[in-house]
Image 1 (cartoon, helix red, strand yellow):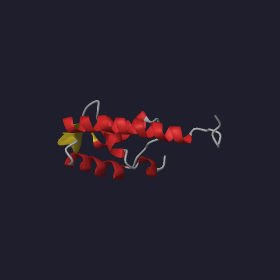
Image 2 (cartoon, rainbow, N blue to C red):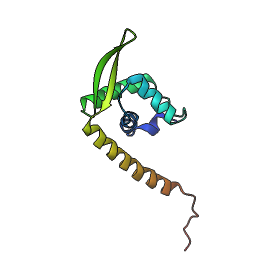
Image 3 (cartoon, one colour):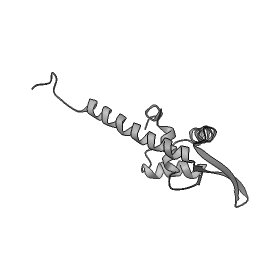
Image 4 (spheres, helix red, strand yellow):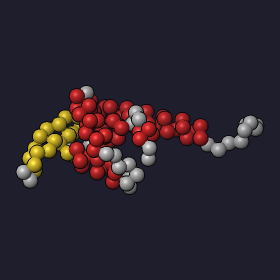
Length: 112
């Protein structure tokens, strides 16, 4: 999938990946890849800056932990993040419906 197709939708995708509970950054990347059967395999250079931006916006909360001697940051949705996710889903459904309608194969000019 081309990166241009994700513009405006990355935040919603990341919030959705965190909906089931806290995850560290790489697990968020893996959750998106698994949910899309590998069609959406974003680079870490895309994921981590977006997670930091979402955290600064108050949509997710991050905390540090140490696992196996390595520090990692775990993220979870805030209430504002849950509200934003609901809005992202609504926006996506409207967008998808509009684009699907426009791309339908219909004869031109339309006949009545």
